[in-house]
Amino acid sequence: MPEGHTLYRLASDLNALFACQPVEVTSPQGRFSDGAAAVDGHVLEVAESAGKHLFIRFDHGPIVHVHLGLIGALAIQEGVPPPAVGAVRLRIVGRTAYADLRGATTCELIDADQMAVILARLGADPLRPDADPDKAYARIHKSTKAVGALLMDQSVLAGVGNIFRAEALFRARLHPLTPGVKVSKRRWERLWFDLVDLMDYGVQTGRIDTVRPEHEPEAMGRPARIDDHGGEVYVYRRAGQPCHVCGGLIRTRLLEGRNLFWCPTCQRRR
DNA sequence: TCAAGATGATCAG
DNA sequence: TGATCCTCTTGAT
Image (cartoon, rainbow, N blue to C red; front, top):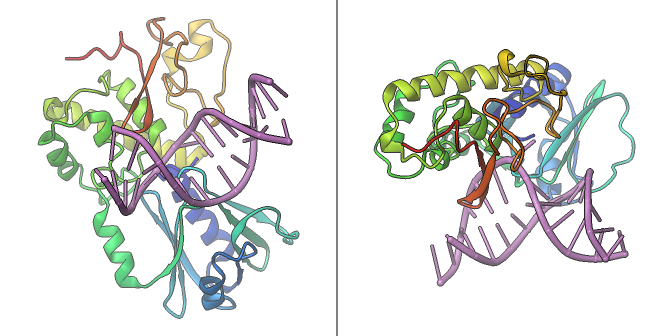
């Protein structure tokens, strides 16, 4: 589930199991052999996330930059590593645990300057206390693009992916095709603080649960259902199913190559 | 056994 | 806007 909260949790887990110790770094698949060799045997100082990016710093300077993309995964396990199975791009082995990276869009070695360039490109990250939602709103409010597209633009908001986009817009009763310029400051602030809450909850639990207590299955007299991504949601990947709130059918369409989900009754166009 | 689809981003036209 | 890359899972045949 590579949205911002996932990367945040991965960074925390890496720090808990690998920080401040020498680690063995390899690339069983072979596509990151040079990068792995450059940090192999060195002390992993700290891992940190920003939006959907993960940075793993080593004591002699280099930083491993990872972006999971659509299908990437970093599996962290405690215990002795078994022989690598599948296309393991990067394997980190510590004293008590190991981490296998597969399918990432980006796995590269960078320096501090390159990391600064990446960070400078990113918009406000709801998981960071120093994030500036006003800056994001300035971008949104001057754009005629659909708010559903703007929320996924990492230079506007960092870390928000398709699930948080769909769910936050539903909870704000905002149609995803509403032009950014038509989103009021008050509405934006509600949306932003809701994203902060939802993503923070995702960090704590590892799940994306967005359904409010009054709409939960027990309260609505329907069976509980957990989506593949591990939580209960209002609209994401529920096209053709009844809305938890109004009973109308959830709709879907492509917006800029990504699946959009919304309830046409609860999220009317203005 | 094979094709399609997926929580992302970039590049060419 | 469409094509492309990355890997794995699921469902159809």
